[in-house]
Image (tube, rainbow, N blue to C red; front, side):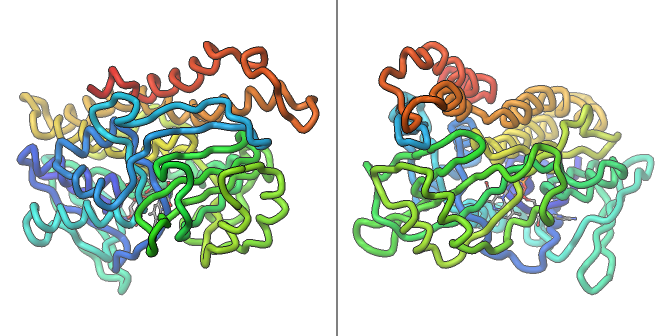
Length: 416
Ligand SMILES: Cc1cc2nc3c(=O)[nH]c(=O)nc-3n(C[C@H](O)[C@H](O)[C@H](O)COP(=O)(O)OP(=O)(O)OC[C@H]3O[C@@H](n4cnc5c(N)ncnc54)[C@H](O)[C@@H]3O)c2cc1C
């Protein structure tokens, strides 16, 4: 089987590596003419790290990123509602890693260029159309100068992100992604380590949230590259988005100042952290209504093209990597199935569980534990509680946070 992949992001490149491991040839076509260092931090949850370990990438990622040892969920007023170990510190046999998206992308790119034949990745090739030739597919890509590139293969996988052209080709009437009504600002800055330098601090419920965590070493002694993100509700879910969801739209610190006043974060000065960030970006947080099928014959979708999701729960990259692993395994061990049957088996394995994650993230993911507490203490002075247990008992908090881990497939017993 020969696989054509549209999109050389985290999902598409992971797929190329899993296919290579399974002995299946592939070609990757990526729209951008030049790879740029874009984005900010991404979390690789233990199930994704376990998968990346199968293709020998964890050592490199671990060198560039930071292992997460602790996760704190707390109210805007600064009171912890969940404070628990993560990754190796929580007894997993693989770490949880946070890293700059560009570093993760580089590790994948290096592995593809070292392991796969020269010419596997073609840049400046935007997917345009695909036709079934009876015994395969013929995909057409377009260069920026307008010239076409045509590739024949057995199957085409759309790994071309939230604005997927492959998905549009399959579902021409679907329209734009659906805005949650939430605006997300994200940046990263060299900043003094906070706590043990391995902790994610996540303050506030879904409508007003500030999160920060380290994603790599800093430039000077005692600092780390600190990733931060701020979320604020601006409209109801489904309202028209204020501009296209573009990962690289620059924003201004002044917009955030009045919002940051609402957070108490004793460990560090988050306003100074934002002010010290040279350039940062806003992004209308979007997803799409889950599809009931990703596959048409010899064409299927994966990653954000198949199931874009809100970043609550930090599962976007992980689920793309798990798709890649499933496709790699099924294409490599077709067991007498036709290419159409291989893609149907992939969809059968992945669509149901991932659509559950998309739905779980719409209601806040594991961070919903903060919303539940904030809802119940809204009338208390300073929105502060005296006894967390009487506000939301541990069993209920555990059901939200660990229930999410089990649903998304990264509870400790699922990753072993
Ligand atoms: C530039 C960029 C910055 C990002 N920054 C962040 C971030 O800071 N934090 C975060 O949580 N997530 C970020 N993401 C999203 C994150 O990478 C994904 O949610 C997740 O990793 C799933 O990966 P994916 O491969 O499905 O999608 P992506 O990683 O989005 O990759 C999709 C790839 O397809 C390419 N592509 C698009 N259209 C076409 C086409 N017509 N033909 C061929 N190729 C096409 C894109 O250029 C991209 O390389 C970013 C994505 C991009 C593209």
